Image (cartoon, rainbow, N blue to C red; front, top):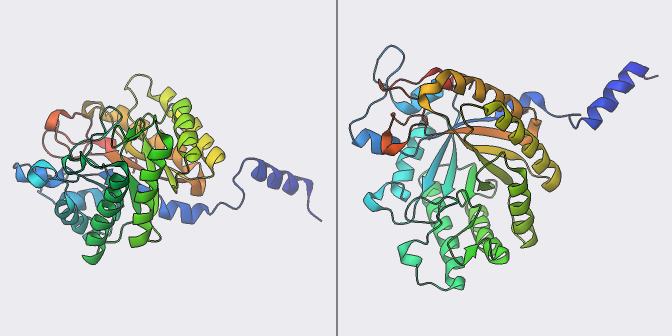
Length: 332
C-alpha cells in the first residue's frame, strides 16, 4: 500500500513538472558556455590572457578551468579581414575541441553583425531572388558545417540566424513575411541536419525577459511552418534591477517550454566588467533558474567574457585590464 505522504509527494512532483527528470544527467549535460569569437583577433592585436598567478595561458584552457565546457562561435559570410569566416571559425573550433569543449555555431547570414537592428544580406547575395536566397542559406550552412566536420569538428548546436527578432536577410526574410522567414529558417535547419543529424537547431532572439515578444515571434514562425529544436535567448540585464529581469526571463523560459514543447538556452548574457560582484550574483541566479527547468534548461553562454575592457567598444566582458578573469565567472 502506498502511504498518503508518498502519494502526496508523487502528485506534487507530477503537477510541478519535475517527475522523473534526470537530475544527474541534466547537470552533466548542462552547457556552461562562452562565446569567444573575438579571441584570436584580440591575440593578433597583441592581447594575452593570464591565470590568477599572472602566467600567460591559453584562454580556452583558462575557461576550461573555470568549468566552461561549451564554446559558441559566430560565422559571417564574406567578412572584412577574414574574421569569423569558415577558416577562422575552424581555427577556434579546433582550440575548443582540444580542451574537450562542446561547440555551438552561430550563423549570422551577413558579412558583419546581425541583430534586431540590422539583418543585412551579404554583398554577394544582395541581388538574389528569394528562391536564390533559400539556396544561399542552405549552401552556406551546409558548406561551413561540412568543412568543420571534414576537419574533425563535432558541432552540437547550430543557430540559424542571430537575434532574429526582426527576421533575417532583409527585406525578404523580415517578420513582415513570417512564411518567407520560415522558409529561410528551414533551409538552415535542413542543411544542418544533412551534415550533423543529431545537432540541435536553435532559433535565437534578443530580450529574453520579454514574454510578449517571444510569444509573438515564435507564434509567427510556427504559423509559417518553421522547424527548430531549441529556443535561444539573449539576456543583458541592467546592473540595477537585474533580479526583476532574471525573474522575467525565468517566467518566459517556463512559458516557452510549456507553449512550444521545446527546451530553452540563454545564448548570450553579460554585464559591465566593473560590476563583477553584481554580475556574479546575477549569473548565479540565472544559472539556478535555467537549471530549474531540468532537461528543458540546456545552458547559459556568457558573451565574450575574454573581451578586454573597451575592446571594440564592448565593456560587458568578464576580464580585467590585466587580462585576468574576474569573479563574474565564478558561478560556472
